[in-house]
Length: 517
Image (cartoon, rainbow, N blue to C red; front, side, top):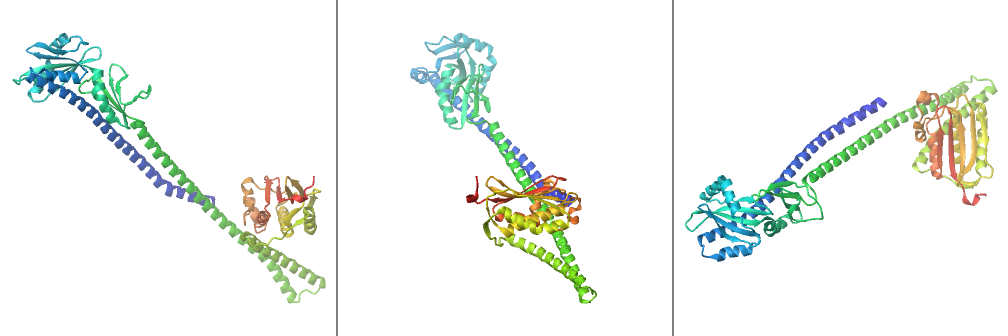
């Protein structure tokens, strides 16, 4: 049977877990692909935010360039430059270079003159200036920035005068003030509740501008990009509460946890199916053995009854003593057969809850002693030594006398069946807390731990060492004992070790008014 069960379990494992394993692998790959896609989408979104910030900075610079160019076309209108300077406090100076000569259009009182620095750029960056001029000739304005000291930047671009001649224009700005005045509101609007956007100088880690400062928190940016206008400034963006890797990791973990839960459920289901099949196979085997045993138990007395009746009918027995002996055998076998049938029918009623119990307050020791006295002859015939040790002064119990007698007889009968060399049965009564107990102890073969709970199941019989065939019975004796104890709201316990016999205890609830100090 074990080999069959193992094959069933193996088949169930293959049938259930193989498709699940494929599904798990597929789901894991799909989750990984989804996370990659999510990561790509987020990256693209963050790149678009970087582009948006850069475009806005370019628009601000482009507006400045248009207004400077407007003055170049109308140099007599000083209000154009003045309005530009008044509206943009980050502008420190404005210069133009025409024909190699640098002219000062505006210089802040707080700023030192940067004409010498402009001339130095013209000498060292001639190739870059030529590129700006080439872009301008193609109707495209490009900006080039040069860092000065003390947070200052020189912004260079090409404008056209009234005669459409190119003029090299320079705008010196205070970088931090520019970012604060023009880009801070913009990144606040973009960031909202989802992102943190920071502008930082590559020369130091502290951000110049950040959309939301939370104490001393330092951010790990999911995406970084250079500012087109000021390459020394980095735009860093991260999700406000989690990074993309955190979200991806969380999704993967959730997916894996779900897969593990599914696997556990399937394994539990497989084990449940296996256990159910095992139990059904075991029950089928037990029922088969029960039918075989009952058939044998019934066939034997019927054969004896039939043989003796046939002998008597044919007049073969002449002696009156023999006739009386034959009638005695027929009567004994009939009673044994009746007892067996009644036991089976009685257990069926107990199991269905149809058995009627007539509980009365009674003396425990008196009932036990009466049963053992009745059973004494049978014990003597089979050479058993019964040792009865009652405990005096026990509280009375509420029980069905016949049910208690049947439970005791079943335990003693069980002890007789499984006692071989040591034919000693010890019966005792006692008190434990609010319980009164009956104990039956034998010195037979004992029961292994793995069988101890099962022996109270109907039809179950211990099969090791071929005991089920050596010892005849229906497998209902202990099941009846358990049903009786459950009906009395009591309990039955078993203590046993192989080779050391068994000790059964029946616990009955004592009647409260009968307790003695």
